Image (cartoon, rainbow, N blue to C red; front, side):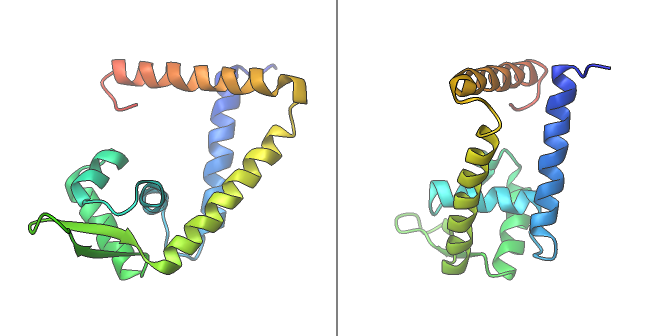
Length: 147
């Protein structure tokens, strides 16, 4: 039986989830916590309100995530330099090192996955995957979800 493209995409999603679970086993990091750390790595120190927006979660959820990551030593809260009512959330030095290593591994995996595709087909595959992701984002948004 030939698998549909959607079946392959679901298979890829499942494989990524299993690989992430394996990679973070025993660390106390969940997918949501890693997503927040990844967001901080790219956005830099941010308010919880901004993090909630960037992570597409409620302010209550972001508070729980930040509390857990602060307790585990991954982030710290610092006073906002211009708004006395706000605090900034930032990565600790050790978390910044972890995220830098994670970015390297991310880049290495990207290269390894692309090696499975003939060099002359790589641009086409990347354009196709981008088009599929964009279309799925549109469909999710139209259905009332967040892309």
